[in-house]
Amino acid sequence: MNEVKEVKGPRLKNPTPPTKKLAAAVLDVLGGARTPVQAAEALEVSLVRYYALEKRAIHGLLTACEPLPKGPRTNSEKEISKLNAEVERLKRECDRRQSLLRAAQRAIGLVAPPAKPRGKRRRKPMARALVMARVLRSQPEAAEETPAATP
Image (cartoon, rainbow, N blue to C red; front, top):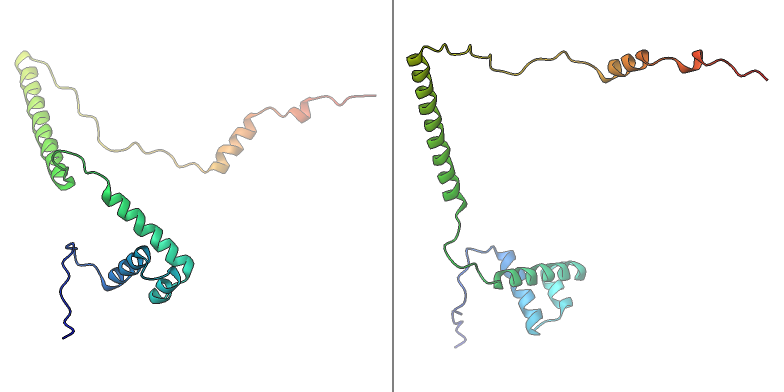
């Protein structure tokens, strides 16, 4: 006779058993069915940890209750693919304009400037100690040049 009826409720995206247990404990406390001490014991956590979990759960509830913005939602994957397509279009446009520029220069007899070598300019590595030694050597020695005060 004691049949368990299936309770209809929100459809969740496969919550884990510990998540379900925590949510049920927090809802029991908020509904008055348990005390926070009993919920902490059921979850096998300290009372302080229970209160932290409850605070996080309430924060999540409040965040979920915020009104959603009107209009279509932004999809980051769609946005990324759209921006990648735009980058490709702009690269093709740049190549096309460079080709047109070269053709116009050839048509009027201009010689293209020599291509600059690509890559980073290498610099001679310098240890900070050597730089500081050079600075100290370049400064005039104030102690030797100052005459000693005579009484």
